[in-house]
Image (cartoon, rainbow, N blue to C red; front, top):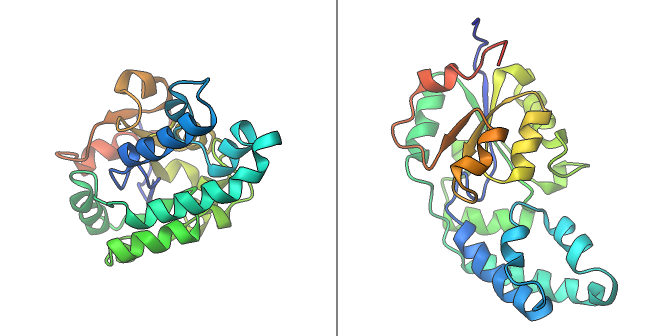
Length: 220
């Protein structure tokens, strides 16, 4: 099969760049038990959803007035979180840059969350050619809007991009954008994300540039 040129790598943030999903499970587990004790395990169902999506589905109507309080608690929690890179991530970024591949973060996180990231990881911004947050998108994942905007900003066509995602909404967004998709089995199991991704990984250790290039074929 004829390969396309690999021009851009587009990364979701939590569960893809940072090993933060277990921390969010703790936070949302407490919130869900407080407000929805009738729905055990809700914190696992809402993984990968934006804050707006969570609020619209689970904190509307009589709970609408609680949204501001929950947002403040989340902001406080995120300021204290650990932002540790997924194993092998920094080596992957270095490898991509050595092959002139542009990189971007494409996240549903907002600017206040990213300010917490920058405080904990001062060198974070230097790893990427672009950082797109929820303020940059009109429509949330699984809509492909975010990834199409990122590709445009980096001067790449959809079939020249690889998306790295962990959530089902994110994986679907990458697929809908017409891009190759690497599924990170950090939030959901490899078997669960396999139908939505071209390659499944638990971390980036041992990942080669050649393996990524193989994903960019015209007939996938």
